[in-house]
Image (cartoon, rainbow over all chains, first blue to last red; front, side, top):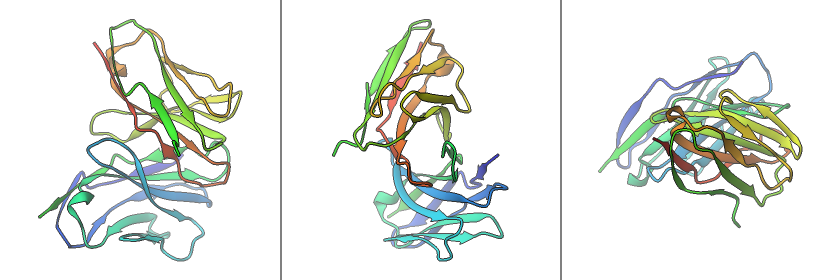
Length: 115
Length: 113
């Protein structure tokens, strides 16, 4: 079974600084994908970034990067140059390859960016 | 480009009433999902479908039913609504390509009183 753990219920960061949101996962499968989603106060789920288990390089998408450490089973999200609009809930999620391709979510981290 | 469309956006039900949450996608995705999100929590999978005519239970299926007669539509039926079903419901879809991201609708906020 898959499990995602996000140990930081809330994080605070100053505008323009970088912040790391932690995510650890547990699976015995070799082929899987790790995803980060953003949920602003308006409620929609916004896909941010993806990392495959066989990808050798860390994924990057603009100001978002994923610090993937396979041996430690961690997939931390790094947001550089934080903006006020980054204030939101952030969810880490995992999908196993094949079958139903279900996405399993962590409980989320609430990020607050201070001016 | 509509993506995943859910209706209604808000609904209040009385205990014991029934309703159907509608979900449609225009991306020709094979996989579709229903999740619920309770306050301060992550999303939990209710039901999913890997194609028309095929559905299966997720983590929290009790009190719900689904059908998938077309690729585009995946309605979620609540029978005999209970206060424990007060939640935000998200429909999502993904392509047949492995490990592709899920695309979510904007959610339906349901209150059962």
